[in-house]
Length: 100
Image 1 (cartoon, rainbow, N blue to C red):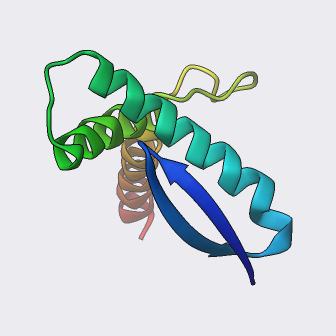
Image 2 (spheres, rainbow, N blue to C red):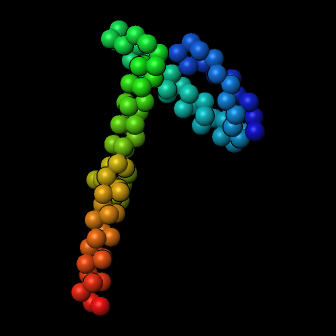
Image 3 (cartoon, rainbow, N blue to C red):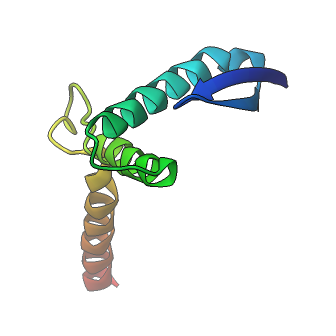
């Protein structure tokens, strides 16, 4: 493991990661820091804890709305995959139930 020192919203943190994961970790830290700075910049949220929560909600929303760029699943957001898989499993269960 490698120690990586970073700064988020002006506070320093020491993180550990594998050397191969360092670039991705630093990119994630930049994304979180930028999002938190944007939330802070609105002037509507004062405490760092609330800024972090608001930024986390925004990032989670981004993640859940990510779409596959091409292919048969391109119209499905990442957050919708579980629902689609559950629906397919139910259809399979029903189909198999009529066979048995």
